[in-house]
Each structure stands twice: as C-alpha cells, then as structure tokens.
Length: 495
Image 1 (cartoon, one colour):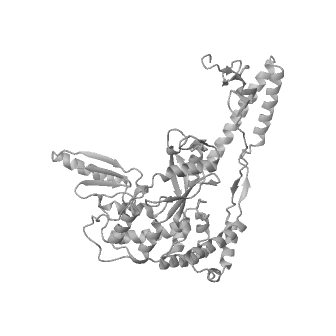
Image 2 (tube, one colour):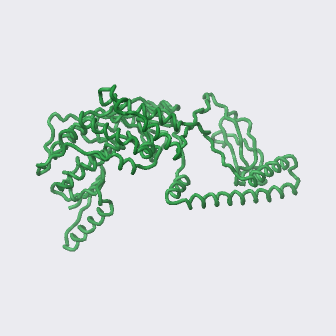
Image 3 (tube, one colour):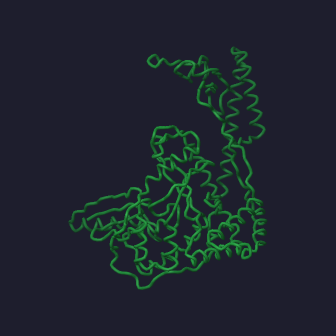
C-alpha cells in the first residue's frame, strides 16, 4: 500500500466483527460511496457496493436476447403454410441458381418468422423461488436492517443466524430437487445439465488491435478478430503444379449423385443453429416432409448448372478462447458456421465420394481420421502392434510426432483441385467442388454484431462436411517410403 500510495476504503466489518473484504484504489479519489449491504445468497460475507470515478463514458448495453417458441403445434402450423406454397410457380420468375435460392430462402424465412417469431427475453432470468424461500429471504433482509440500527441487540443477531441457516437449507433442498428432475428426463437432459453447470459463459473483453488501440465495441472486436484469422490463409503461386504421387488412376469416374433428401433431413439434430442464411437445423428437420421435394429440386439444379448459391461460399466465424491473455485476438480459435442447407448437400455428396473411393481402396491404410470404423483407438492399436513387432525382432524404433500448423487453412486450392481431377472425380461434381472451394469469404460474429467480409484464399472450408474429407484426400499420398500413421492434421512417423 505504501509503495503504491493505495488507499483502503472499507472501514466496517464484512464478516462477523472482522474486516475481511478490502477495496484498494490509487489515487484515493478513484472510488466513492462505498456501502456495505446484506450477504449475497449463501455467502457469509457482506456485499460491497461502490462507484468508480472514470473519464471513460459508460453506455449500458441495451441489446435484447431473442428466442423462438419451438412447439409441435407451431411446427404443425408452419408445415401447413409450406404445403400451400406452389414452389414451381414461385421460383419460375427467377433464372439463375443464386436468385432461385434467394427467393426460396425469402419464402422460408417469411413464413418461419410469421408462425414462430423471435420474442425478446430479459438478459437476466431470475429464479422463481417458492413462497417459503421468498418469505425467509424477506425476513432475513428485515433482520439485517434491524441489526444495522441496533448493532448490540444479541437477540436479533441470533434470530438472524437462525433465519440465514434455514434459508440456506431451503435453497439447497430446492436446487437438489430441481437437479433430480432434470437428470430423470433422460440422456439429453443429463448432457444439457452438466454443460450448463460446468461451461462458464465468458464475454470477450476489450481487445487491442495490431497498433495497440483498444477495441471496445463488439463491431471493433469482430474486425480485430477477422484481421487476425485472415493471416492464417496463404496464397501460393502454382503456375507449375506439382506432379501427383498416386501410382494409379481409376478407370471408373464419378460425375453425378442421387438425392435422398427426406431421410437425411429427418436425421438432422434438433438444434437452433446459427447459419449464414438463417436456416436452423431444427426447421429443416421438423419440416422435412414439406421442404424435401423443393430442396431436392434445388440440389439437382445446382449440380446440373455447375453453380452454387453465393451464400454457400460464406461462413460466420465465432471466436472461442484457447488460453493466455484474453485481450489478444491471437489467443482465440475460429469456429466456422456454414449454411445448414449446404451441409445437407455436402453430406449427400460426401457419402457418394466415400463409397466411390472405398470401392477403389483409395484411402491409405495408415489414415485413421474422418473415416468410418477408424479412430484414434484403432490407430493406437496399429501403432502398438507394429512397435512390439519391431522390438521382438530386436530392431530400433524411432518415433516422430508432427502436427501441421493451420492445416485446414493452408491447403493450396489449385493443387487440391488437381488431385481431385486425377482420382477420377469430374463432370458435375468436379464443377461443384471447384465453385465450393473458390471465392470463399468469412465474417466474425460476436453477440449480434458482425465484422466486414474478408477473403479466404487457401484451405478447405472449416465448419463444412466436405472439408475433412478433402483434407485427407489431399494428404493421402503423404506416406511414400516412410511408415506414417495419420489422424486429422497430426502424423506419427516411425522407422
């Protein structure tokens, strides 16, 4: 205190007769109006209220939180409205893939917002305690005020302790019963329960840009994040493309797919997910019967025309804190969200591609990531078997672990397309993949604000279904003369 010239402002007891909670400031006039109030919830310490004298203007965040009322009755009404739409007539006025898709989305969202509108909620959801707890809380506050007036009255102090103990006990019983009811509802409720219990909601603090300037508003934070994330993308010149290392080229080619949209929509998760076109998974799942025919027609048009909607080339990035200083954008991981309808198309295409590639035994036996019936467990078993085999023969084993930095973001698009062509993917599917990988853009979202759009010049699309498949296709020829076990962007090399 003396070295920093700090001043301690708490002059009254905060727990029993002791001053255990302190407030320091330097200079002394940084704070004013320090008040000691009743204990908070089950704490045995009094609360401290104080004001900070600051020249930085403070504006209260007035943003509202919005929710939709997802009920079976509402979705039944919505399905009836979608069934009335004559999609062929409505979309016949538009002549490009992009305009038809935009018109389709406009109709979907108009009816969706009409039947199941967004409604504002209070940012602070107060617990609705039973009457017994509310009465004890009021009585406790009344006794606390009497103690402040008569600090030497031991009878009031004793009654205050008894009421406080009773209140704590009733609150504990209330939450125990609430937890039991939540857990008894089944597996999904248990998962949600633990997620809410152990995953803290932490807002992104003030960030500092590359010049050291503070970014206080969500919009400025979004742009600071976007500029940081964009540095991961690297444009390379491949005027003289590398020679692909595959030993053979498939005689059979793949150029078309069939669409079974309804069954896939019914299997989607019931999530109110964020998407660039504002269509959540739960809407597609609950309205699968009425929407699957028109979505199938759009998918066929997209594949036949060799074009994709512009919105499918865009993604929303949500920053997720990793570790270190929270004020530095470099310490956040980008989580990409792409169009939900595009992901449905990708899933259908990915299944077709995997079946085609498996038919020709394309994937290296040492690749364990993103493939059916392969995992880190099967990779570990394979590695241990090979190591023990070498040890039994008296051979030396050297192991090198390699983690590709920004693996998904740095894949050269031109070289990836060359590899796609070489393995026999051509025609409509090749045209789709070229459009899907090219001219991509992203923007960062924090709360309800978004950054400007930034260009993606390399990499496979993160947050997409095809991204992981395209990545393992790109690195499939990595194991040439050295034994490599691969899982996602990590390789295990040993000789």
